[in-house]
Length: 136
Image (tube, rainbow, N blue to C red):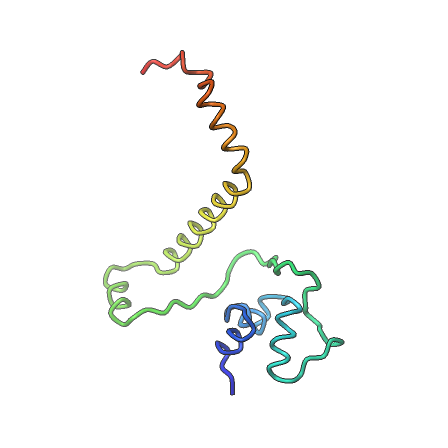
């Protein structure tokens, strides 16, 4: 019998993706994912692909707020968390927000690299309009 981790690995998707789909937290999967999982169990049928996204674009959840996350840590770390009275949920929330912000900034920089480089060259060549107004 295959574990969920093994099915996810063989299908080339995150285990959390299959878990969210099985729990009804995600409404659809990519057609290729359904095909790979179905072939593992010998039950793939092109006509019965209910809940499968037709496009190649990944599913974007319209759910707004609460999701359940499991954090695994050693017993020693858990004891320290309790001792220091840390809020693991808040820490995880802040870490996810930071990661989203970092990724958004990275993608913006990549998408606008040419314009940013052009602006930087212009400033190097001509300076800023406020250069003569600085008091420092």
